[in-house]
Length: 192
Image (cartoon, rainbow, N blue to C red):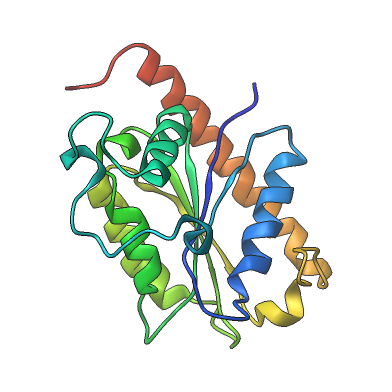
């Protein structure tokens, strides 16, 4: 059965390479029949977190938050695409994620990390893994690091390096397994 897997991009920089990675993941998920809407902080234009979505009176949250909440409630899992800024995650990613909490519960996440260098953003991914667990969307064991992202993917997210397709396939297989398993368990009820 198809899954709903929002792809959450974490960068707002001009000329951001993360858009390549996010587009690649959207295309990879859609090629398997999944719904993979892109969550782009540039398009959202969220303010710095002053109030979480749940802290607004019903019907008074900004429209962008209402749309995201509706999408997240339908989601079976999440793909989070993160750069590495100073060995950590981008502030725009933290801001985008922190607006929600319960909407993530009992759904797996999967981390795609990237960099212009050879390490592929894995240092940021380790911090992101802890954050996602705290948000209630624990990450699957595998990561998908994309080193030298500007050489690995074109601007439209098409692979330029043949090595990328194999780990991407395994990564999506693993996410699919966890998302399907947790979807079935959510149907039976959650611990609280």
